[in-house]
Figure (tube, rainbow, N blue to C red):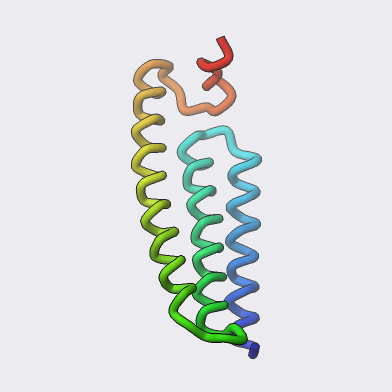
Length: 103
């Protein structure tokens, strides 16, 4: 692997760390959802980099990446629908106040 692959891996690691920080530290549910998407995009970037610059370059990483993007789009649609429903019922997007399943 060359320096270009290392650049992709470094960018993916930075994206994943930023997403992880946002998912663990923020209280707004929309920000948490966006942070999870950032982590998924970091994984997609790694899949593409390994597919192109790995020891056996092939199209498999691209296919996995497209599958992951499709699953992420469905996840966002469901997540936003749940958030809208919770906001209508509770009037807030704070994840600490979303404890309706505990009762």
